[in-house]
Image (cartoon, rainbow, N blue to C red; front, side, top):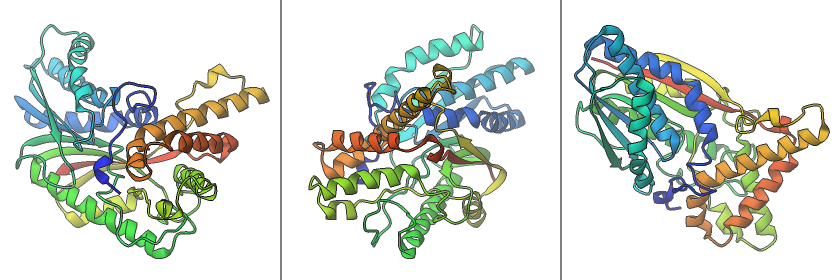
Amino acid sequence: MNLGQVHMNGGDGETSYANNSFFQEKAISLTKSIREEAIISLFSKTLPRSIAIADLGCSCGPNTLSVISEIIIVVEKFCQELNCSSTEYKIFFNDLSGNDFNSVFKSLDNFKVKLLDEIIKTEMGPCYFFGVPGSFYGRIFPDRSLDFVHSSYSLHWLSKVPEGLDNKGNIYISNTSPSNVVKAYYKQFQKDFSIFLKCRAEELVEGGRMVLTIIGRRNNDPCDTEYLCDDWEVLATALNDMVLQGFIKEDQVNNFNIPHYYPSPYEVELEVLNEGSFVINRIELFETDISASSDKSDFDSESKMSRLLLCDKIGYNVARCMRAILEPLLVSHFGEAIIEDIFNRYLEILIDQKPKERKNSVNVTISLTRKG
């Protein structure tokens, strides 16, 4: 599997990440207060004349700039309250080299205009924007060059698929996966997250802050059926059906595993404590409603037909979101010719499920301070 293809669908088309990142948007909204608390705490202690902010795994689309806008507005309002001069902003967008950085930078002019309107101020500190391609599972910034690091819905991606997996018929951890598959995934997460923390500790100034949101789980048992990921089970079903019908070779599916791991809060906290460079300020769990992308008010909840329509709408939105995330990875392994068929089958399976069978996404958010 070519993990160089781990990037979202670029552009602004129907299957683009920019138009299908509503679940990520919901997670960003739910964790807004934690980011605000961290940035105010950081800024109020030193009132820096310049602040360097990095968004790691920034991807593309409206969510990329919404977090940056939110942070700048918080700082500007704080400066106004203290009647002090605005600061200078250095904004770093990081993702793998396949990310659609062009769309991010094309949207900056409109972003700046809207930002000034929201601040309601004739003048604010200068903003400098930089693209930083590369894996965050390694050094990407100079020593002590960052004040604030943010990452949302990125750290569940592993640096690679764990080695030596024998996970026949599955594409992720399943209740039929051998125990060594579960151990291999957790070991890879431990290694990757530890490296991530070590690198950020070298890049952040003393007292620098970091807020991370990771798709995770509540339970410490990754094989607990309550917390197994619906989406991978559905995709595995679609792929295995295509094997039975001769559209895909069985070996292709057996050799395809998703490079994800969904940690529990305990697993996240344990790696932070073991690495030792950060103080944990807060660690929280949030759930993202899978129906958040659909306007329930459009449907009469008392009507059976309306409930079916809502189920279809949820399934359609989930399928579009998954395609925006996974299409480049699937194309690199299975080829482009069968992509439409894969996601048509995926959608059909989702619609056949009852809405109550769908689980909400669990998010682990942790706020950290770089030790002095």
